[in-house]
Length: 396
Image (cartoon, rainbow, N blue to C red; front, side, top):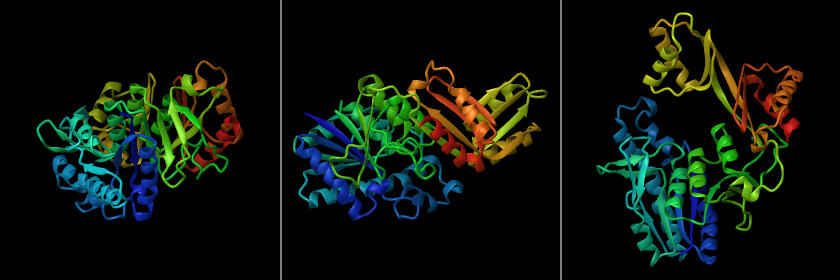
């Protein structure tokens, strides 16, 4: 049995026209001899009645009085509605299809509500349906705990669901459908010259996703990489012959040398600088950990600690440090720019080119860090577009 997983995001199931565009990709896969697991997100985005953020707004959003278990019960409704609507459309168009919730599909998680971890997948329910159906539509983003409670698996959970099911069923491929044609070398809203990428490695696309490229969740990429299952990032609205961007092991498919694959970015950051003259480094990070705040872009020096936080977490961090009488210097409205490429590893001069380029453009580098495949720099938010365009011109 050949199994293919296809995931359709909120914009791909938002209305009848979009769902019909999605249907043609499913029908083509069936005609190609596949049994298809379709994973769906909630319908639309904020403002649409059944989108996750719209449902959250019904209970006062981040100020909700619901506990996380109760909130998960509400938020799972969006994907459940989407599954039923999409399954109905397929059946109406003579596709042999059945719909399942995450619970019915055998997705078992721990009880970490709102950010549950999948423990195992019972493949029997879907395999039994494939004896009589060609397509099984599964709710993304949700599962059932060992204790029988409905759980959600965090933002980007539908991508993760698709990857988990792909791994569990040893799928030949996982297709992630969205409203863009695939990966680009930069955000085309910032860089008019951004180019389409035919092939990228798991590591490259994971790094770009971590650093702000929103076409796929990095956890989904990591799961597909562990299982060695190729991913394709595709547009729902293009023809079935348009295969999008292939994500795979670089040694298998990326046949040419490429120093830099793309320039990604994350905006709306706040930089924190804390002197360690009167407070120990471990105390600073201990306070953040205890509050559930994930710090990023960390530079630790003998006399100070520097890190960034997303703007929505910065206010809480400031309040904690004020309560502990820890003096903090903050810089608002910062942006992190990431130069990503498997070809960077072991190549001298890449950082020099970044620094020289930004210096010539009179853009101050507020912070920097690097790994084998990524070099990060922090700039003022007002310089974001300028910095991304300048680096794209030099490397791509």
